Image (cartoon, rainbow, N blue to C red; front, side, top):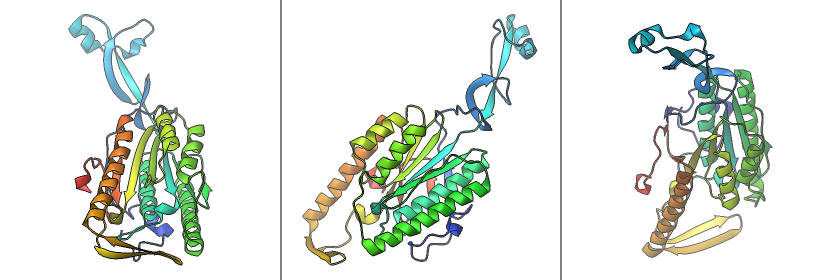
Length: 311
């Protein structure tokens, strides 16, 4: 899509198919367990659409599925097995915490997350998978059962645009407000109550409020679902481009810091420690975490960034 004019506003047109380029997705780790027909191989075996393997004939097997060529070659009866193609529901969870409404370059983290989630949703719909878009912020919360039709997805995206505008207006009028529980915790708690085996769960956040409770909920979630965490980052969160006196201001509050080399080294050290800790947590769950910059104009989910030097 064209580069956003200000990286701030979000409209439905920004969430339509092809509005933000996506790279290839990483290979699927788990097989779907849904009973609905779709375009992915299922873990359920039976007489389906895709040939799977040949094995020795067992009592009760359908004699019509005997592989006579293998039987003749081996001298022992063998039967063919097939796999049905079944859908894999996709849930896209967007953390709309106040910290996500931040960027110094490109576009707001939450705006980029919305654009990415929309394109993943359209891709899932094309694969005949149902899609659900959940989001939670300081002032809004929305969850819906997965749907499989274009009008339903457009309605979800329209709700997201409305919530985005409401959150942005609230921040501009009231400033950053503390929310307890955090929107991220609220999303994970609610989803863990309704999740079903075989779901693909994309989690978009900056993980600034990723504490022990959120970590426990992620551990519980990966027992049955395929979790794909996506972390949104701004360059200023990784290093400061200025030296000398730096003025920070929010409303009437002003703070001046003398930003020298020693302070910058400590700032970068703390960021790397935070990043490595987050990466290690998801590594323990055997899940890669994807790092996306607010300046990225194309998202590649085929490989995750594993080195802080790559950022």
